[in-house]
Image (tube, rainbow, N blue to C red; front, top):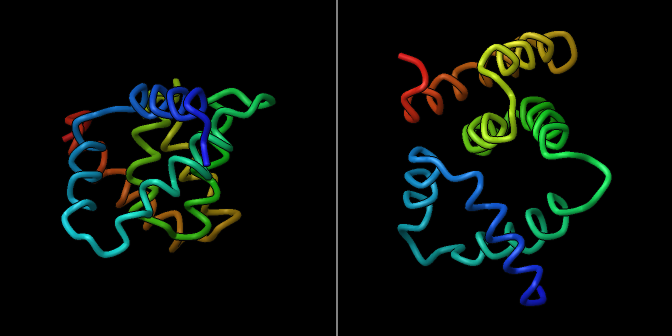
Length: 129
């Protein structure tokens, strides 16, 4: 269980990542009571426990997270984290390079799926056409 201080810090972190597209994706995920505790688990186990740790800055955490999600072909999560990466200082060009680089380590199908997910997220946010 999170302390009030940890809950506040995690909430502020999430708010700093906010975007129109992220809100839409989160709202779409909250349309059922099935598995409705998953958001709380993410808040406690990922954003409060991992993203707020010292040792890596947000930009570095975003790069690492993108690489892992590409390798796992976790496209739904990747859409959210593409937008978080932009908030954490990565440019669209750097996002492209992450995906290009992944072709050599995660394989072309994983990287191409990541490209499709990134395009969808960037379009939802109005960043690209």
